[in-house]
Length: 354
Image (cartoon, rainbow, N blue to C red; front, side):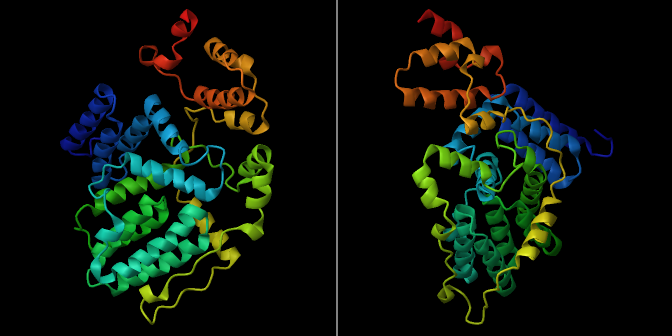
């Protein structure tokens, strides 16, 4: 590390590294200390890479894949689902002091109805992929900030909401304005540093499938193969869920909902946002090529470890066997664990003893 940093930075980074070395569950705390450094010195590459090393822990990768997999299948490559993966990951790993906000209860009272209406609009994009919702939400939030007698409080609320929903670029824009106008707002710079790291590294979070294609093509092919009837019904554009405009009763009488963005302008905005991602993707510790085999249905069980092949031989039901094949394919894509920490459930000697 360059000598330009004061001694306490070295102490913080050493403490973070010690947590990572000594505590099986210290990854999030290691990242939190690193974000403290990045809040003071945003270009400190040692701190930024220490966050990534903490997030590359094999057990952490497995735990987060399981947790996110309860909500989103890894083969679901729709863009808004990728954002949800990022949002869930941010929530799981963040140790920022305000992370337990209850957005409705903790909204600044002066503009609470506006903020809640904006949040509902944003949720239409976050949960359903209705991009019109995020367009309208941005206008509502900007108007709430303008009308508030305490814009710093509102901006911090909005900045964290965007981060909490996986809109890191939007969060950074709001937080940067907050710091420019109100640099001493409690917790703002620390949150900015954390969200900035996520924005710049979102393409290489180890437990999230790469977003090489976010057009939903894999999702459509998987659904068509797994459940053709569902695919015919749910993938028909005419059957898409309807967008619900904001309730004007919760907005100022003179507030005008902005017109929809032209497609070409939206494309330019998305391209500009993509340029904010500065970190290279690099080689993932997870072997995501398993998704190709899963999609094609061509799973070669002879390539599985011997213990996994024995396990499959014990299953008589074809559907259960197919499910277990898919599960094992996903499990074996994880980075290897140190031998002394291997999962007892998949301990080969025990299987052979049985």
